[in-house]
Length: 250
Image (tube, rainbow, N blue to C red; front, side, top):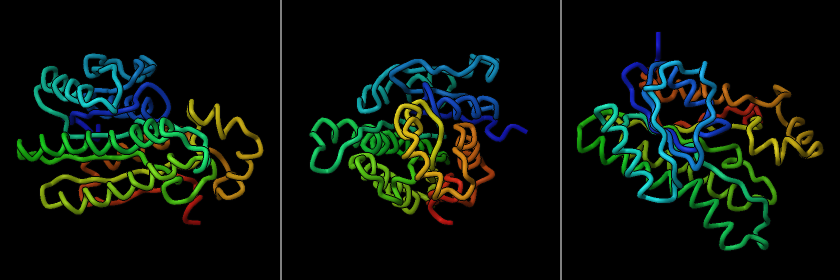
């Protein structure tokens, strides 16, 4: 049975990588989806034959106007505001603390954390005003639990996103709003193909600490997000679920 039948989802950073996989998985599980990205999602057509269940908003998640358009798009096309939010948009810039520029900080922290904060605020307000339950799934990272050198803003933004997850879960559990996160480990995406995955030495070091001894696919991470967004996880909130092949906990 489709796990997200009757749900309306808003997914950020949906054009590639984990976001692209989430969109495909959500559509397969019966959700209607609105996406936000700077580019149009490149999800294969055979992943969702019902293209009427997908609407895309092209824009920057750091811009409040982009969020306003996304929420109004869901309302206009699907008759209601979203009741699932996936904060997946993320960027990485390699720099040490001393070398980090103001622009590095603004772009990485603004995209990875502030956009999720602002989007979640609006999402929760709609649910509270309408008296509806809902679910937020934030895409954090093992970088929120472990420090990776030369990625200062990224590390800090993901740690902040994980803690935002716990704070929001505690504040809105009694309102029927669940807030969880996934913390992916080494996952093959467009971003990692040009960074860690492309660096044989760095990739080897990561694999040495990963019990499963391989990289995750974006689809594997998306499956965990489907679970947390669905009613199957109705008693789960405040969790930061490692999807990392055992990197952090084993």
